[in-house]
Length: 108
Length: 120
Image 1 (cartoon, rainbow over the protein chains, first blue to last red):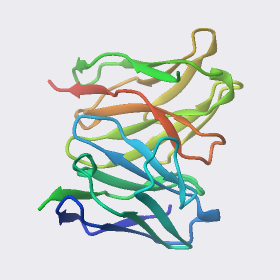
Image 2 (spheres, chains in turn green, red):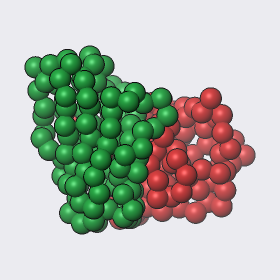
Image 3 (cartoon, rainbow over the protein chains, first blue to last red):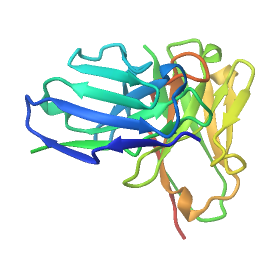
């Protein structure tokens, strides 16, 4: 099973700042099969990025993903108030599919 | 419009059985994998398993194999997650979600979640 480790656990930033979230895999993720989700309190997760760098339908271009192999990054170029949430990475190239433990982006 | 509507919250006792549902609409139910994700209180997401309603091919995470059963009824475009004997540790929010495409693909549409509470 591929273990995904996200860092930092919590990111304290102000609106308008840039957020950089990391996701590191215990072994290479097949074909860049990595996704990022956003979850707001009391809501279901929302798909942001898939195939490491492809934005899902309707996702603003301030969200971008990069990386390959074992190291992946989600960048939010300028934080909007609605972006303060928990973010999860997920690998779906190897069974069982696994999620990282999450990074909380909070208002500083 | 794609929609996944889950059944309501449940409160059960340890040892009881339970089946929760996820009603799909707005797309071809038999053409997409659909699965379940667990979120224990205050914790992260866990992939439980998926089913392809077209032929009922089902795959489980080893952590959940033998603990739950995933099924689907294509006549009413509904997926299910069931337990034969609940434990207190099954207390969690459960989400159904549709895969974008293949079994090895991310989830693009999610249900609203079903909260299951198991307590004596």
